[in-house]
Length: 306
Image (cartoon, rainbow, N blue to C red; front, side):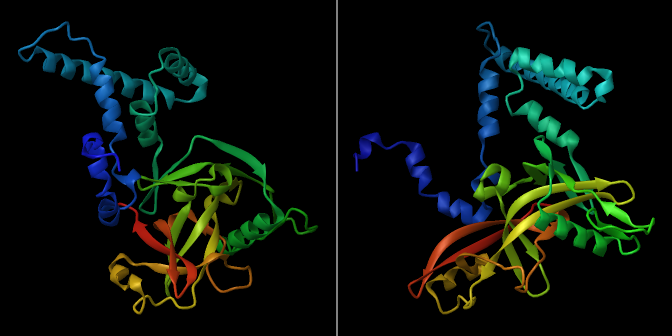
């Protein structure tokens, strides 16, 4: 359009993006922003115009000094609040602007990560304790009754004289995002990020894909600690077989078809709207397709890294 004189290397790289996405998944799984950021950090180190190998030695020593300092500060930020160390570290980062979403943030995420049934979790830093909607409260009550069949759990609004019954409280903690096996999943209701909110689970008959509306943590004495995802499931397309469509060449990618802009109703067969976060097997990429002049959704599931 503008001639070869204005073509840059990035313009050429762009023609390979589709190939990379098909082979490696979404770009955020292998982008190099963190490394570019580190290049900028390294360039700020003072070298006093030394050469002959001294500049490399200076870089190496300064980098490791900064890395050790960041690690110590990150560990201190995880100390109990009573020690005042987290407040001191937070003030230091704000004063120096050294916590810029890279080294310290990544170290904090790794320190805060935990494992449950072989799945690594790390809940986001932004969360809010809220009253659950009546629909979500009913789903949570049903789910906990199935998980804890030996306990008598009742609704907070249900009157009862049975002292063994446990009234389920009406509040839960809602998180902006969760990192599962190094992949970020965002709650659509709190971030409006569709690309990071599309998740997949495996059921006996098929893979189901849905939009992660809420990331919920619920804990109550005698009931324990539970992580849930509130999901709006896509509605399967009637003609799910793509073998007779132009998309048959993509069968190796595991393309699954869904009705465009349609979601499962409460009475339709499919997964429960409230699931354990450990049940999520990966995230999904959603594409708009056209088959026989009908607009539908096609999804490709990208499993989490082990």
